[in-house]
Amino acid sequence: MNLQIINAVWGKKYIDTFLQLSLPTQFSTGNLKTLKSKPNYILYTDQSGKEQILQAPIYKKLQEHTHVIFRLIDVDKERCHFDILLQCHSDAIKEANKLNAPIVFLAPDCILSMNVFSYLEKAVDRKKRLIMICSARMSLEKYKEIIQEKEGSLLNEEVQWTSQDLAKTTINNLHHRGKCLLMTDDKISSHPSQMYWRLDEHNLLAKSFHLHPLLIWPEVHNVYPLLSADGKDFLERICPNSSKWETIKDCSEVSLFEISSDEQFTSDSRIPINSFWLRKWVNENTSEAHFHFIKHNIILGDSIPKPHWNEKISEANKFLTGLLKVKYKERIYKSQFANKLSRYYHSSLLSRVDKDFFKWHLLLFYYVITGKKKLTWKKFKDHFFYLFKYKNFPVHTLKLNRKKEKKKV
Image (cartoon, rainbow, N blue to C red; front, side, top):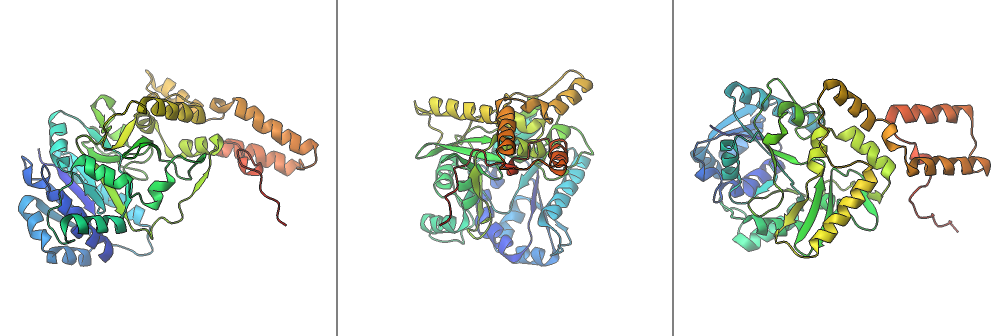
């Protein structure tokens, strides 16, 4: 069965990254050149992007080993690029369903190790429907320097990366966004879709709600992503049988990472850990599939186990369990009613009535009786409005889990 490889790319700089840095890794051992069946390589781009790709020397190599299909899109500069990407992915799913074919989702800035496509082809033979991978983000500028030193040029049409070497290179040259995901100094990324703990010089532990859907072979047709291919309430609907899911848990066989310029995502920040806002973020951005993914202990690096890892992994799991106040288990229930009831519970305040709940209100009560805060009817009304709308506590009104600010002189 032919793989449907999807890549949406537009804009000269992004296309240059795709042609010069990403595509050469796709011609490495065990990738496009060695598949049993010639795949369809579907490129979503605009007219100028198509012309740029056709003129690239490496395009001939792509045409030799795949069936290249261009699907032209209208790129409106005022339109959010995530909306355009969502439209491309939805169209790709619709077209693949006509062939009952598995879809490989790539990004133009992804770097592949050897054997990724061969791994996916074998997974399809094993009747797997969903393959997920943790793709950390590396600095594009540092990657260019490494390739220049490794290959002697940025114009090579084939770049070979073993899975472990690519993983070690990535975690030692993380992009700013990746560094924000490192759990240090009691701080966490303001967008904690993934969280990293350093195990040693060459390995990270990743606990991830959102993973990259490397392969989707739809079980249910006419199901499309609402926000993104890794977003809420999508993966469990298009591939409902979780026994046919596979999460790549280490880098011993294959790895895939992404590169971004140091000028991108500079607004990402790390903020003090607070279970209230974290649970609010989880409630707004995750669904059952993400709780399936977060239970996995994913190792990014050379993946050679060390004796002290078990203790560090156990500590990370205990920390995260305590922070979320939920167990890592798939929320699968026998009846639709029980499933809806459980969803309501986990998305409601009932699941958060714990010591933090009482601590928060006790502190608020203390502020009121000491005169630090005034309790008005409007504040009382707004408090409960916030509780029921956001299913979380308005922690912005208090300074919890933060060091006391130094008084200005």
